Length: 90
Image (tube, rainbow, N blue to C red; front, side):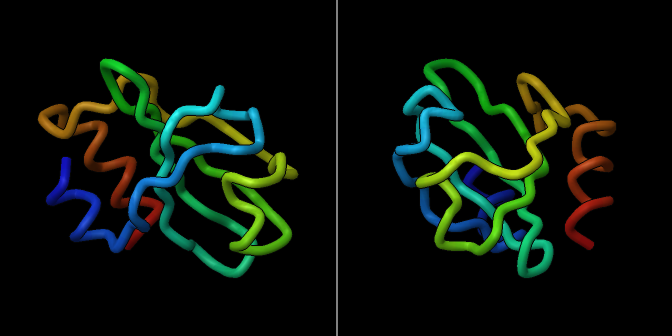
């Protein structure tokens, strides 16, 4: 997964302080000034979300205005998962 995070310029993982991600670690990539794609890392897997925040500094600190889970248990070896991620980031 490290290659995925580096290739798409995700932030380093930070601890969620908003309670939205149950205190799990998250990393994100900016789609535009208000929309972000987020990976949540829990004990055994990653979940992928698209979200809307007022600004980048709110990610992980405040609740998002919009949050939609795109993929539960993201697996980079599954082509559909890679295609969906590319759809948002390229």
